[in-house]
Length: 67
Image (cartoon, rainbow, N blue to C red; front, side, top):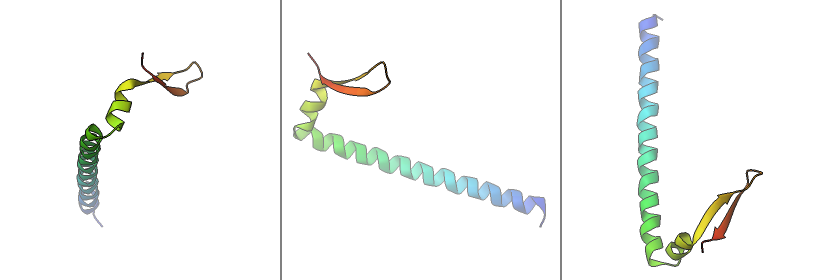
């Protein structure tokens, strides 16, 4: 096989991966938007706005109510 053929195959794989990644990103965006819209109607939106996340000295994160 010539190197041109192998380069073309490699480029096609790269383009396919790029398309798949873009599709996954778009699906994730849509899912997040749906969660946010559903959360606005429920209690989760109120909970999210009254809690904050803090990082301790050991690197662990803790969720605490905001004052």
